[in-house]
Length: 182
Image (cartoon, rainbow, N blue to C red; front, side, top):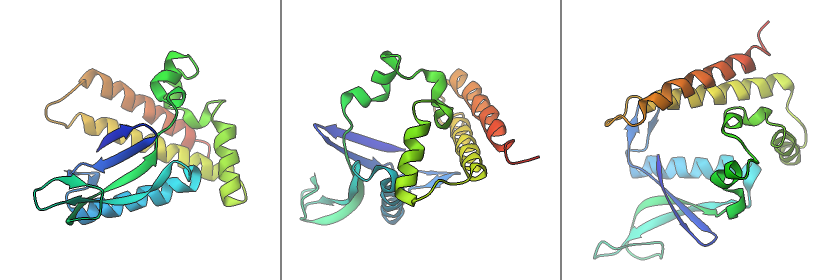
């Protein structure tokens, strides 16, 4: 739900002014709030990537700039651009990550130890397995919901893609949540 602008080692994310059943970015204040929340939440595990939130200004001629002149008309998330070798498409092409692992990222052998090591460094301890299962199940349900939301878009793009993907996420959520329900 954002436009992403990339240059050299710099990335800016500008949230689209949209309102959906599952999110509301329709006002400048809402976009500022959600930009701030994105940075606050993601800095816990990726401090070096998420640099901050910046105002986007418009001068008297309507030109947009990040320089402090004119009126702040919107907000952007500023991030450090990841190396090309770490881009998702490159990881898939190198067979370092296959698409089926995407919806099981927490269970993928290469990411689990890295994720939990970073979490322990930031939180000073490891969450219990039940909490991790709830988190994994919640993330899978959220992704299923986003897949289904694509089916409500006008115009509808790639309908054959979203239903099977939503079902795969629901299957994953069931597996994760079954770890905490007897």
